[in-house]
Length: 627
Image (cartoon, rainbow, N blue to C red; front, side, top):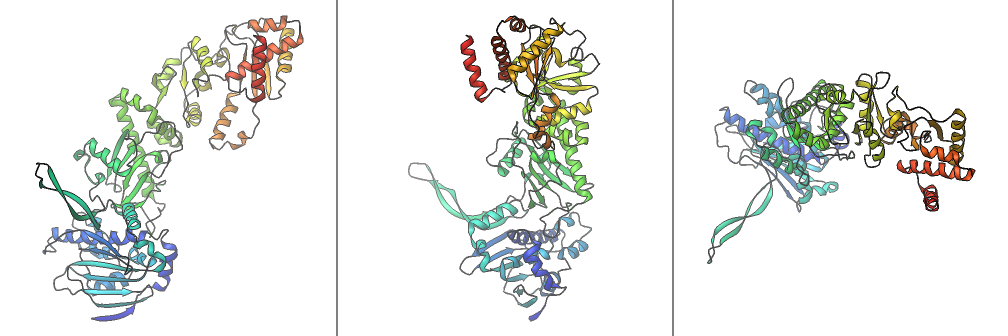
């Protein structure tokens, strides 16, 4: 048997595309060839179970081997093999996928669809790294003759009698000079670990040494002997292929450690399993995140029938869940011909919606089953939930029932519960509800204490997403606004009808304003003399709530960049009812009046962290003099 010929269907255009454009990374030739070998192996197992093959199956494992001296890399499988005619059909005529005929033939057999192995363009990725590619194969069919195919990456091929004596196929790559990295054991191990570690058939790559018990020594202690065993690089039965009922918590945790060896244990996980209207399995883990928003993403790995595809899953997984870890496996996710890029498709949107719903359902269940445990996890999961509420309308609708607000006393409330708690005292004269919050409880402690003295409650909003979350709450909650606790004095934070009376005359107000303007001498600081309780501080410095919030969002890159370029402007609220103001007015010396005013303003600025540099040094010197 000997035949030479030309590969059909415009292949003169295909090889340059394969070599340069089709595959984004040449290392995935190994993924394609090993995947094909696995498919061929699964097919013989399937044929045997259907009674279509009655011979011995033998050891069903794929082997990857290399010879650095001969510059060859070989992928061997004990699968269905090919006849010379099948080589011509499946290898030379790219348009006909071997899988198409296989599925057609056994379409009534359950799960036949899972056995699709496209012996087409994936095979030709071998020419990215090889000068010559050789196939040695023997079909499972009775009386079949071994066949050999060789091609140098042009459209010329040759088929002769092969030398293989057992069922299956060897793909032998004669590695080209630019690709000798693929003759290195560590490099090959790295690629196999990346793409093939969960393939459903054992993959052998060399051998490894293990210790086995070997009786006892003279003292009765156990002896061990070293033996060479196959180095199986993959776990053919990862947990996402099993039923949740068959798994324990330890199984999920062990798998998490397998995926992320150096990570803390996750908080909890969600087992995905759906077969309509698309096929999808997987396990998503909630890691401990806390307030670190600058997290390494790409922690969710996408597989297609246990073949690793990518960790770039932004279209499949909602943006806010990109912080999760885990695995998604779906044969229904549309990929381009290189399997490297997702394509826009209605299934992708359906999968995205399904994952969002599953996550919301899981969180809702956790909240209902054990609220105390849920509250204990809130510091870790609050970031996910708030991010999801801000970015996904459907998620907000579900999450509003289990999202929690936390106050400075470390008490937890749902949105409805918190509204009921603060409504009696924190409704202003116009009937608007005002929520007070701190983004730094230690720095804003004096303001929190002032609010608490009026029996106002103060929420803690100190996560990176809270600026956006606050804005969303104001949009969603009826007649409700949020103010940072240091945005004004406690008397003014929530406007009431019972404001303290002004003890200063109009002329005295003008004099006090003039003294403070001279003391500050900064055009961006606007002085206002107000009627405030004499128990409050003499001076309060604050930035307008709206302006400060926009600036905070600009710092986070929240689309408010132009606010970041605005100069900082502050309101200086002078408490006209404080005894110090009376003392300033009573001072005979202009210098003493200005020094006292400066001291009061600097104290207010110090409490806001606004006093720095030369101003701070001058404040310290003045304080010493006043003592």
